[in-house]
Image 1 (cartoon, one colour):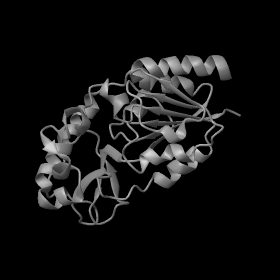
Image 2 (cartoon, rainbow, N blue to C red):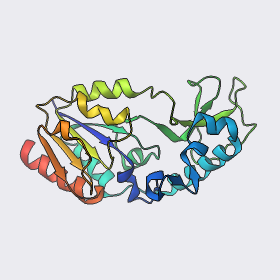
Image 3 (tube, rainbow, N blue to C red):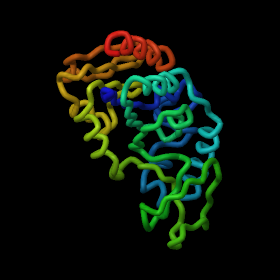
Length: 232
């Protein structure tokens, strides 16, 4: 039976594929603040702006290509039971070929009814506008977990971490909760690896921790080589 390799990914792994984040530009996304485009309050105040913002991001994500970091995770599936927990909404893990991806913060390619969060549609790179409705008559909104909203997939993610034989963190500052708390569910005995040019502040979790100070496209292939030589 393959050992369970659980991977938590953040914006850093997608940055090398040209996907920018609000942290890249001092808290602004395409000159918009978080409050304007990524909160329930922003949606209530100006839904047209929010829809346009995500329409543009949807197209950019559809055009983006996976990088060597994404592809190295796919290659690891040959030897490990790889489970990816991602904070990213761009779909690049699936595009690369990863087969087990849990999305904590939603997916850009999907929209849902404002009146039924389980009424979800995959629209690819299409635009949605005010007046585009779900079957129940509710306005369609991005299938994104905004700041201030519940993260429904956090419990399944925690279960994966509890059962991890290995745990890898790639391209995330471990500052955004509840995702940042997932490392706390991993066994002290499980080897842990962090791949990031900058070491996150996690002094409480230094048991079996290896830090690889590289970008994802360099560090993930390095880790894959290390795991294959030591544990396969």
